Picture 1 (cartoon, rainbow, N blue to C red):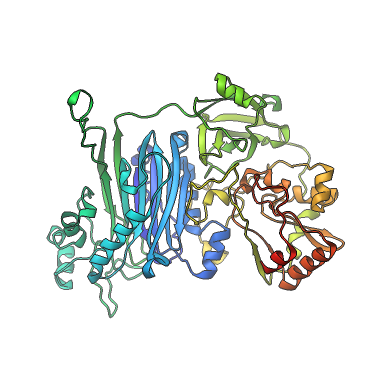
Picture 2: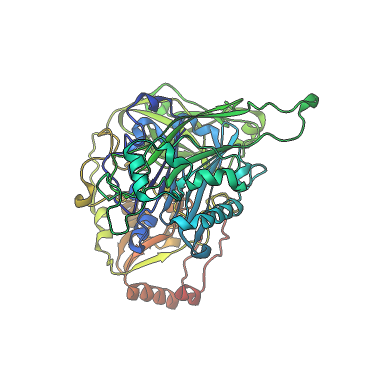
Length: 614
């Protein structure tokens, strides 16, 4: 497991982070998971709006760089400028379950998220592991405040489930971030002398975190490797020189990575013997800073751990069987078998992914896992079967992977080995007709956000992910691309890693009566379905009466898993347009139904007053 922490100081991402992640080295082949904690990501209002609608540029960078090495984004959580990303090799995905996130604000007495902690917890091969990224209060004299804030984070963050409800209840905890501990007593001249003379050990005993580990009960059991790298704060941006401003901040090891193994239970084991101490072991293979990155006044820190479990769950919840090659459409048959106790849902689906995909929603096409005899197959332990339509299959040659996405657990429960698809390319040119120009004519003078009542795609309410931070896996079709001035050279280690959006999203045909309900003509619906923006939240079509839209609560939008549980739908229009259309609808007595999840009751429309007040 590789863990990285970096206070990026609101900077733009650099062009290359391969050395930070220890890529293109022998170590990469052995790494199974990577956790990346960022602090002070640009979170100004205009930037947060973009990042809420699209994927932030730092997350885009790490996904672009890691996907060619078969790392998939497992989970992410953001609290203003504090971000945590957890990646894993694709073949480990079925064994990463019970994924939950949480965040705790401690800035301004708990009302502001510039300081605090974000966490991702999950079961790894049956063992509970928690990654906690923190940004604690700054300045030398705030040591007690850092202690109180960390205790608050540990107390406030609680997870659902029968085991590991608190952070310290997990079998293994990784705690990292800009912890902001400083060097006491020693003056700046001696600190710089020790750094220049490479006698860093003379600074260790005055490091506040080293002192706290032996005196604060809340830190009991936390371990850290030796600080054999220079203090990582504070540098002049763009250089490797410590602060030369008028403040002349004293160098300090503010950026740290620690871990804690849950102590064995105190009770006696079977036969009156104490349980084995060797259930879990952690060895730190590397702990270093990276001086080559100068975009921030902090240097990033990375650590590599070897984690050894005494046992592991090695059978996936869903086993998928597929032919070695699909050379004809009729071969696109998928058989799958669900394990006993697996909680299937009618919203489960099987995605077809290109090798090198970035996250679970980054599929080429999909098919719903809704076989007619699904319950019987689960009960009798038989194989169920589904088939991809010819229109949904990618044309040409390539390597692909199938993954079973469980809506109940919001994770992939089974994957296949890579297999080949070799289908002839269609001779008919896919001409983008006049459907692509419809949205460009809208007035973008005012942004109107229409927030859904529920973001849960499954029957019943799910409260697994309590963080309100945007989940990157839900924004596959919405990617923020930097301008040519900001973009610079490629950030990816290989030119193939930055791929275009998948174009093989299947067309969905609605029955005539449902078309009438939404007020969209069949010809106009065809234009929407064929639009290259077919996976956006709102699709605008031209009508004689003005602009109309197919909203995210329609069957067209709900039929794509990317639109299940997404953040607010949006469209661009002036206030006069918005109110005018609503008044016109009110005069006609027609109020569209606002069904935000498949379980919302049919009669869920709002009154005209409620709609205008909204």
